[in-house]
Length: 384
Image 1 (cartoon, rainbow, N blue to C red):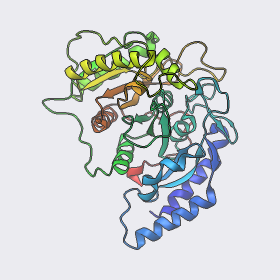
Image 2 (image 1 turned 180 degrees about the vertical axis):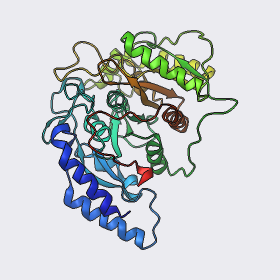
Image 3 (image 1 turned 30 degrees about the horizontal axis):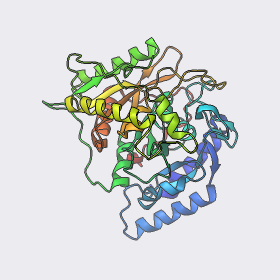
């Protein structure tokens, strides 16, 4: 299939559906068509492009800066996905060209943020893959609430403009194989991820609350059941519960580091550094006895567009922005409200391949959730 045909299909899907979803802030039709033609010419000349013709969304109007390796591999950016408007509290929804970004599962609910448009575009089938960035959960939370895969890489693994070091690039995709394709291209690692089955699957510790959060019981039950399914499938091993995971609530430290002219940003001193030191030590203990840490991705399901109230959707994610650990959200089921729930899987620094293997195993066991409003049968990257 030619790149120009694949990209034309994506642009048609966007034209047909984006007025309802509002996933894109800008659509680059002319540029995308021209770029697809260039990809076809490169392939015809004998160049091997592992993602030739894959249409992608890039987070925000400046997202092309982080998408260079994907473009070099043949991806065609079709537009800038929606991010929150100025002054949006807690970055929980996006502002697209046609209005507020909605959750493809329920239009009266937020897709999460701040990679809101990227998650909505993938979940609605407009593009198979979109880039994101994650400073407190901004890839994992919208992935969870839109029923897709969202990977945050190890902090510092790829370039980031964030002065605090809390933000890391990431990817949103419907299929685990597409997230793995992103990882392969971004790192240059040629080997494919193998499912973690066998006589010695990775050991996983499940934590309901990391010692401080308060997840909704129904959501927690779905996340726990997803962890058990992984164990039943032989993808992980869940030993008998041992000492519970008890981290210090990272909220004060994260907020202090994000504040303008943060006193201890980058200095290694002050209250934020003290919290980070304690949690780093406790997480090192966790990963000394287990390969993976499992939690619900969020403490509650998607809220309405009026806002989250006093609760933080980041309660279970931002600890790993402070610690820098890679983490992925994978679909864990659908709640009674009709909205998806995510299972967060965290690994030691640099072990993204293990996270992607677990995501692939979960997909093989439970399939891929499709929102009732999906308007397409958009193929994944590896199916183009």
